[in-house]
Image (cartoon, rainbow, N blue to C red; front, side):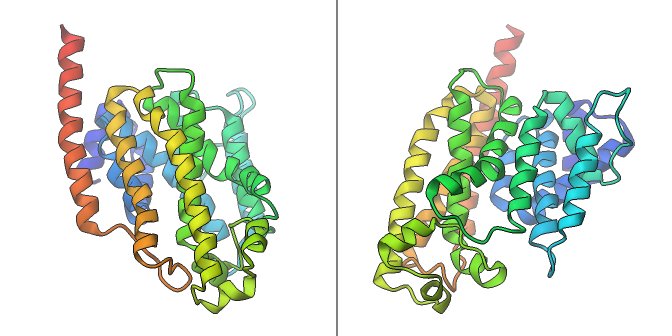
Length: 314
């Protein structure tokens, strides 16, 4: 088992060997598939990191049923989700523990942090939508999807980050949606060519005179550019609303949140720098910038944890 995982699991008080192995599976999924997310998690106190790995691993595992296979497996996703939810019922009536190590780590995380079952139910409903829905007529329709696919991810994270103000919940929801919209903008071409989906509201495409066929052609025409510029500004408004929430969580959680906020927001800047070419290219924040941002945050996070420890010991 990786030393980084072992130290964090020790700090979290997770001693059962099977459960430790489950969390390690989640960590590896996070490191392999969520680079920005993973960089952010290492800024948290070690005792919190395993739980964030579990949240990511669970979301990634569900996504594998939908997008990581040549033919999405609706029945498998439904069975996997039902088995997981059944395992959350009171112990006297609970079904057998899930066979999936990621699901076992997620169940343990939910119990540890009292994460509501309803958040997972909403998430699984949105994953089911991906199997049948290829576009969203209005932004309100897209928001309904994003509640389950993104907003509840922010709400699942919130207990682990330790909110310090009631308004933190609405800010966490907005940040989840901002991250999701950023992904939608960056992945327009990939989502359409590989999955036949458009995650920008069709009403917006109509306003700017853009069609599915125009997007599929791969050329960033002036109407496409204006459409993307509009969606970027809408997404930045979500980031602006979410930003005050960073100060509404525990001091030792803020560097993690700020780093994710900065790096995900940076994707929008890269889209603009790439002349909005998201139909054939997949833009990313350069590694040098990711390391610079996370390096500064790491040093600050260590000082914050040290100061908190001194304050608690005083």
